[in-house]
Image (cartoon, rainbow, N blue to C red; front, side, top):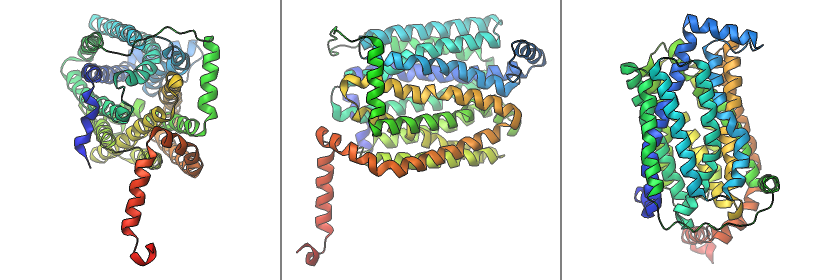
Length: 458
């Protein structure tokens, strides 16, 4: 494995700046996410709060939204459902706006949300309903921010040859934060409560805003005349779902996200009710998934090329599904940690490989719209999995929900595998045009000639 190839995207100054700021901010984001889920689990489990939630739910005709499992699912739903509706429109705007300036706005708004959450928690007046509202606000912000960040990468890394490495390195940073953030959050929650996690997250937005302000020599943004927004949205949808490789990648991503998300939102219940642990154990379990994801991202960053990635992507989805099934049966902490390492590795490979393949295949003028659909498939499908998973888990138990999702992932990956030969016929012309296929094909031909016996070669 050529580990020295990992940092080649870092030769671009703007990308280095962005990665530095993001690495700090993402740690804070994971600390807030971990603290928020633990806080909801703690509030919903207290007798007084449980009674209040139950009365409100029955009055509103939502009696099924009672209990810690349902509330955890509802928080996950509120934090992600705005992306489902916002991201497709945001993708159209990402192809029209100055992406650099728009990112400054979205990051400032995200910092404001974190400050309000921290202030309410320090004041001691935080309620589940306030958490739901703030989670929904952040979901709206992320709905615009994700397509902007995904499409902004090509402006920071203008050399297309470095683009797959830049995506993989960014995934490495995301998952390093996923490892560090929850572990720190578990320790901080045990020492001083969730409020410290929220405060540090608010402060962590400073470096990413500074990194954006320090960038220079970005491609000059030019104001262009565009057709109506609705027309642009329809054009992007026709392009993405009319091209079989992009359509298949998005659909598989959506199914995997939908079916794997219940494990993430129900992990506090696995920690307290099945493994009989505390906040430190919860941080350990989330961090274990982060270790697997980080390992996967580093492995992706070290790849010389993207050929064969679709085949490996399907294998990762199958192993992810089987890992979810095995985790649902585990009652031992060491086995649960090991399985989360595996599922974290496979889920990150699925996300980063899909991102890389889409970024390589998409036409430049539709990049923002396609990446918004990627965000919709990844983040937008997740809230439905969170809500349904939490509601069903309240009735049949968290293990059965996670087990069912695992088997659906396996079935979806097998269907994708059956269609893969057809998809390659659409992908090869694009790879030839971009200069990706010929060098590899020549190398394979040379290898074949070297390994062919002389009597056969003649």
